[in-house]
Length: 388
Ligand SMILES: Cc1ncc(COP(=O)(O)O)c(C=O)c1O
Image 1 (tube, rainbow, N blue to C red):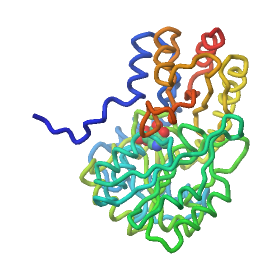
Image 2: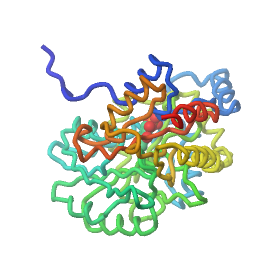
Image 3: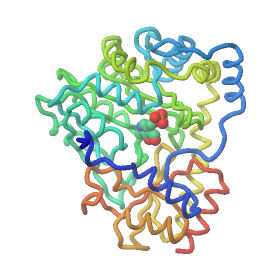
């Protein structure tokens, strides 16, 4: 008899929808990965690193050259000087950074505030650490722009003596909302004089629209001092399959993170790290990403306006949400499954990002589109979507 540690956990919705897409030859705008190739130069840098002998275990915290390149970027963009030796750790994607950070900070019975809807790995990580997730919902109204917003009073109200961590993710998956200066003021106030730490999941830091500047939590000294800032090269360089990310945090926090990281993965693929270290030195490899994705966002948004979907503009990420209430009254999971099987387009139900996906309150007739796709893929999907 196996006593499952996670009896309630099945296969994630992203895998389920990708499988359905494969089985039914559906156009896959579900799972968040690009269907185009990374820069050839980046690929040849990996090859070069292998030929140059970088094939054995690199430093546990990550290749020094890559930590230096990350430190340089964080300083240039967000004006925070992280020490590459003691404050930056290269991880197996943002996913491992999240797991290792949460395991390192959360003790049994500690409460962790998560904003709902949220990325699906946070809650299992909290539970594995013996922590208690405390959910604070985003406010939602389809008639507002943006349709989702965060009410910091509700975050403050959720704090108790047991609160250890608050997990924030901006630009936000799945809603695409970003932070404003007033949000950073509110965050600074919330953590002031409290023994509470933050995780800033900034996996989509380089995808922010309408010429807005991304406001990293590392950009405010009083916040950065208590924050694990996590990002992912997968999203920035179209290499989700390489699984390389990183975490920047003050020395004392990084020391705790590394204690877990060294036993979860020990270290991260060496040639990928050497290649990324060299590639990211050229800022244009990430500074053009927002405009690259803005074009795709605007194209999809405009085209959906000519369908019975009601799209909501994103402020960042490579996701866009749309309301389907004119098409169907089914719940989100049923609607997306039917769409994949009968119409051949795979999307993600937004309810999957809620604690209880089948609850009425988690179902707002919203679906998530991933537009990290070739234009021809988007066009193929739109051909179908405009006919339903
Ligand atoms: C908000 C968010 N955080 C973390 C991740 C995981 O990133 P990685 O692929 O680098 O592990 C994702 C991937 O979809 C994400 O959307």
